[in-house]
Amino acid sequence: MRVTRHGLRMGAGLLVTGALALSGCDSTAPEAGPPPSASATPQRTFTAGAAGVGDAYFPTYGNGGYDVGRYTVKVRYDPAKDHLTGTTTVQATATADLSTFNLDLAGLTVTAVTVDGGPAIHTRERNELVIKPASGLINGNGFVAEITYKGVPKPLKNETLGDGGFLHTSDGAIALGQPESASTWFPVNDHPSDKAAYEFEITVPDGLTAVSNGVPGGKTSTDGWTTWKWSEKSPMASYLSTLVIGKFRITTGQHKGRPVYNAVTTTVAKGAADASIAQTVKVADYLESVFGPYPFAAYGGVVISDSRIAYALETQSRPVYSASFFRQGENTEVVAHELAHQWFGDSVALAKWEDIWLNEGFATYAEWLWAEHTKEYTAKEAFDTRYARVPAQVWKTPPGKPGVEELFSESVYQRGAMTLHALRVAVGDKAFFEIVKTWAAEKSNGTATTAEFVAFAERISGKQLDAVFDAWLYGTKKPALPKPL
Image 1 (cartoon, rainbow, N blue to C red):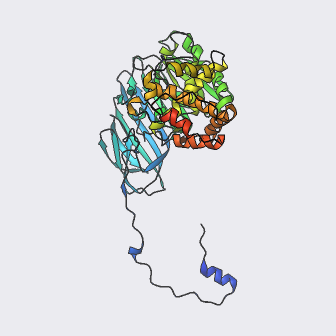
Image 2: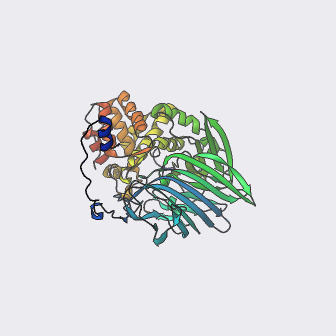
């Protein structure tokens, strides 16, 4: 995410009796004893799944006891009535013996729930949907839950960025936000540690476009309603899902065998916004040369104009940008930032929110690399400017452990990027870019932590890097200028 447009720029068992017979042995098998008593068979104990994953920053986000493989989300939204109906199918695997399990769902009314085709009891505890199947779910077994729901969707008051989630607009809706948003329009395990594939079918009145993540699957119209289909087969963190409904200028194409789908709201005059996101594939190709192969099956971007959203977000395969980024003219730096997230934040996702710098530091550093590529300024110049000019609070806030209130602070972005430059200076360009590219490849479609990155950088570079990371990620004073190790 780019918070605002302001800020600094620059086995098989052995069958004993069969084996004896085949060998010709005349030994006899021992007499069979009495059958084991029922008490000899361990009894399963089914317990309730946790109502949160236990993230230190957001303990109630997500849920425990299962792992989702795929969501199929089918919703119908009427902007005139601000009313949504939906059916979401959750394909998951139990990771414990579960008597009940939770899904995150904010505000909407659940009308029916089934698990593996049979009716299930459901209750609500605030924004938690608690589901009790007819029988316990066995650890390691797959299950399918189907939830039908309806209502007027409302945004959530996020703890860091204000309203997030489903927002009704003058001609449609926007579902967007970080660290949570998905639960305002479909039931979900709402934490980035449980990534899944997604299929979306979004039905809206004729004349409106519904844009989401991944590969466009076409549209069909019936009785005044149009259904738009989207498919994101690569694992995606829930907050990276999006829904944007409205009137847009649509530009489509193909690049390297992948579809390109860009949308700019018609409430913004044609110009800088269109020109900027038209550079998406050009920017992605440059970043591919630095970070390795582009990780997803589609390219694109969406530009919206809504006073409640003054940020851009790296929604997977198709970032969403506030039109405010383009009021002063063409802006490819923000495009570079959000596209870099496709590698760092999306493909390599967070295991816990404390490590947000792994997303934002990399994306900010990508801005500097893009500027160097376009000969606007060098990454070193960007580092030097920030080293001299960032506010004192940046040095007081450790980006590796910023705290909830500073989760999207300037330290996470700017000092996070400075940490990467300090690493580059310490290990040299060859090792640094090998670290970055190999990290993206080895952690592709997974999750990661800061501790894993530090160990990875030490392994690739062959250098002991505790001092570098302690100073730049965890220190509360301005570090000395970095130098080669």
